[in-house]
Length: 300
Image: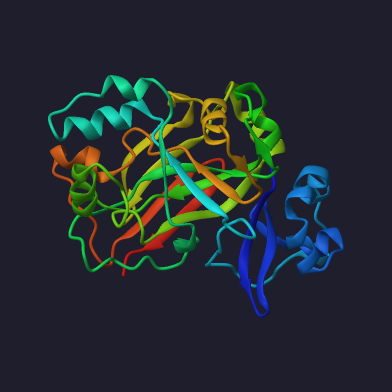
């Protein structure tokens, strides 16, 4: 099961394939210039994915890799949905509230800052304006084909793959913003982590359990201690419904990112009643999936 990503390189970055514990140069596997590979990235994933499954030793990258860039050539936009009922229930419970009945009508999302995306191994800078820093474990689906008004049953034609996401949150700022009736804005503006790899659409299909639901596990860890775990099988609004909503009278384009929202037990906010503290400088946060890898960032 090859995984695709990007790493820093002398002349910018290099597309890589990770397989069986080894890292390979995708451009060497395919016999392409790096610039041509990036230019045709989504077409290559659709039509030459099988070529990436059998890398030769001449494509092996010998230097150990400890830092990754987001696993797409460019993040064009970032929509973050609110699709797990367990998370909504747990988060609302901290304020003595229940899930609003309107939540069940359709999947809702907000736009986050696509210019503040970081990769695995990169540092996450603690915003000066918060004292309640949280992580949120999510999945991020990458759009690989242009589409508009996409029917829920047709969503698979438009997905290039999936990666792990950490939707960093300043909870005190977020609370203040949402009381006004707008946002979140600065509560989410400063960073989103993606990576380390993309599981491509060909392998994603083997994990499908029903329309828009996949057997993909996630666990959140702080300084090596597991805080919570869950699985995408538990999502309330499936990916078909999410893509249909996102594309309603809007054109989705390759490089658009569709995030699921936080998994149940996927953030500190849900665990505050158990005495779990907000994040501090020096903490290392890892969101791990047996299918995709480990997305790790240190808070500085």
